[in-house]
Image 1 (cartoon, rainbow over the protein chains, first blue to last red):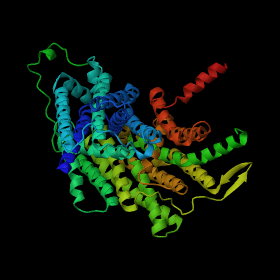
Image 2: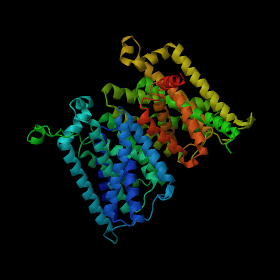
Image 3: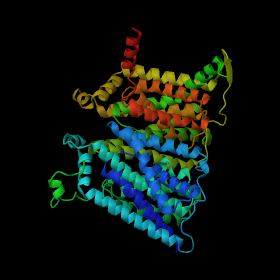
Image 4: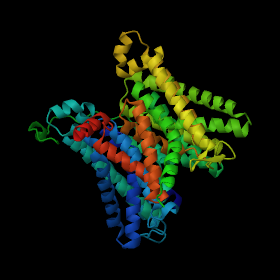
Amino acid sequence: MEYLATILILVGINVMLAASFNLIIGKAGLASIAHPIFYALGAYTSGLLAIHTGLNAVAATLAGGAVAALFSLMMSLPSLRVAGDYLMITSIGFQLGLLQVIKNLEFTGSQGGLSNIPTPVSGPERAFVFCVIALAAAAVTLAAIRWIVRGPYGRAINAMRDDELAFQALGRNATRIKIVIFAIGCGIAGIAGGLYAFYFQYVSPEQFEILASGTMLTMVVVGGMGSTWGPVVGALILVALPQAITFLNLPPSFMAPVQGMIFTLLVILFLFLRPQGLVPPEPPAPLAHRPADREGKGAR
Amino acid sequence: MLDTGVLAQILWTGLATSSYMVLFTVAFALVLKVVKLWNFAQAGMMAIAFYAMHAALARFGWPTPAAVAFGFAVTLAATLALEVWGLRVLRARGSSGLFFFIFTLVCSEFAAFALTLVFGTEPVPLFPQILSPTRIVAGIAVSDWDLMAVSVTLALCAALALWLRLSRDGQFMVAVSDNAALAELYGINARRAYLAAFAIATVFVCAGMYVYGSRTAVIPTAPLNLMVFAVVATLLGGMGNVFGAAGAAVVLSLLQSYSVLVIPSQWQNLLLYGFLFVTILFFPRGVPLDRLRAIFRRAQA
């Protein structure tokens, strides 16, 4: 039963990660691969706060999300200030640089990782409680993102992504929208990191290496870039596939690379054969019956 | 401690160490200049080049020239496959930059996973002995590896400069990098220019991995970090300026080498990421050397 609950917790966390990454890369069209580092920032912040200050789990997890969102500004402000592909370049440097910091600091546990993160729930029902929390957090994330992208702000995001020049010519501030979307996505990844840290009570830097970006890309590209439900399908595949591979009884040294190869191969195949993913993006919400839009009070 | 002997030694060692960084940077900058592609698949190509040479040397027991030729052939095949069956399809479809980015990055990751499966995660050098004979020249320790690294880099860069300037294909490549559509109107085959750019980049990648792997043990994911250096140097040198990027790689390498005097070695790599931010913040189009020179001249006057 605990096994099944753990699988569902991973599904919940991965849905949060995939949906938030999809918001950045699929909806806003921002090329970044640094999502795992924001997940790491949330996990480490929550874990460290719980260990050193005894802060309760909810506050520590939210603080993890806030720190991830703040750090996202450090990355997006300089790179989105200029046009072009700077965000994707900065994202690689940012991820590798911060991982270097985490690996070298003693209080983060250095290379060995951060262990003994206190659990807020103990006893036989621990896994079940976490399962409910993770799935509820995933549902709230999906609902919040759907609310953002189906509303006027979502239409502004679509317009910006499709034709930034025209969008700016209309007097809209594209950079501000990008920075806000990026911060929201990274903040959600940070909260997912907090959930992970409190359930598994251990985080290590190697979980958030650049190869982890590949697994996140798999969820988004295979699920459907830009679609609301695509990340759910992507996350289910990402969690189910390793469990299926486990039944092959491969040696542990084979497991990780085989899994990685399957994920990356799936991304490549989908990019060429089904670029819209398993769940294609929904058409934009109709403009009718939205007085705010008619008055021109949409997002800037 | 900071006598001229130490500083000169760091300078020489830094220059020798910068050699493979220059080779990786030139490969990256050339593809960016001609194909207009941030080729993150280069990390995968670097890993393939290294492990192909390693397999030929350590597993098949081939002599070094044959191993290098094998490494080049395998990497060239992979690179051309990437261009013909991957990038060309995306280009024909008019895919967005995001697709190119995901595709090239995921190709690198796929190569890293595949090589991990075959060769494991244990670091391996190209040769069992990574220390080379050293002599003292004017108070500076100069190893055979240093001389080999510097001479290979200088020879390849000179050959590329001459080829771009004097050969017909090189001039076509420059024309395509300026304006591919216009070049095609004049009868230049842009696809051929792209293939040539990838082939030359493969030469630089293989040479770089040979130089790097003959002194350092490599794991399949190591090229990803090396590639970030090439990206920063390309940005600093100014996109489209291949030899400017090479110069930036030398400067970055020297700065990293001299940084051991002031910061602990484990933080040395962080310097690179610092440069990345400074570059993107202040010099997103590269360091404007002409403008700096003009300011300097004006100040002198």
